[in-house]
Image 1 (cartoon, rainbow, N blue to C red):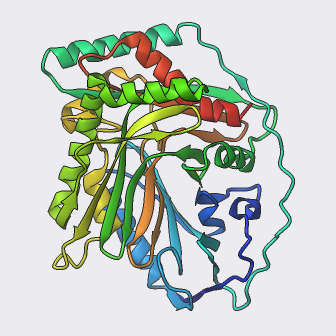
Image 2 (image 1 turned 90 degrees about the vertical axis):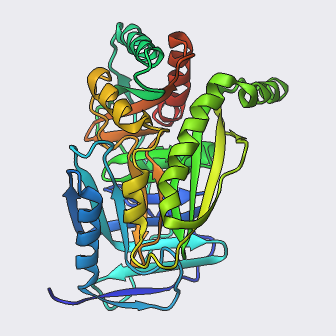
Length: 406
């Protein structure tokens, strides 16, 4: 393998608007409240699938790193060469790995640029390119709502029979445009409306997730668990009352506890200590509120080779996107969900040369394919779930993408 230079240096434009830098073709993004990473150009890309896809992804990434002569004057997470990745929900489908030619990062008052394969720093286009408006017509299936409520009823029956405790069921809708769909417009709308979420784009999967599956930084690991949802009304007083009712809801608390327990159990073997708060907090987004818990841990020093890939292999799929017990929930999803999730509900984000990274769960998102896009929503089903209420919750979760495409 020939050696290429990877150079990272400080960029002096501290007022960078990361999303404004993106080209209209195949942008890469992981941005929250103006901070994060964006990338473009493809130095190398591959796909992985099957039960060993996380270890296969690590192997490919390490092989690529062997070909770099890395110069990094910035240091820290997300500097140097970075792998953007979007893993599938099911191991049977393809996960995508991309090493960008150019990466720009921003955190606090620091900004930096990394580029591969050139001795001179690339010029950044600090004038945002014009956006192409997406005009979407949605496919109509008049029986879709009835069919999905029937699947929820089936799931509740299985849960009440004792076969499992919780299952997450998803649904999708397809929209079409007369021209190819522009991902940058979607990203910028989502970032504006939902600044507390992570706006992501990898290989046509674009969205804004509120759920951080894994942040690994210098042996410290964090996972934000979301499960339990209620729609907002837009009336502040009414929404405060709804937030209080969500925090007391036995159905939502049950759903949330299963998700937290699954994440804590996955992290425990790697950590000398973990912190799991006794009670969740209520996360307020523009359209919904979620029960949320931040699970944190310190990696054991003796586990020298633990990296983001290792932990992802144990974390995914969590009860927040699959169910409890995991195997039985996955089997029920395969049996009754009636669709391919692709990379929806899979890990999405970035991993750096040290094996650290930030990856969320691909929620509130859509998969672009030329002039069409599939958008998704899912709900956690437990014994007390009501099909009509779950339908309403799924509609609320579709609002971000529908609005960004309106």
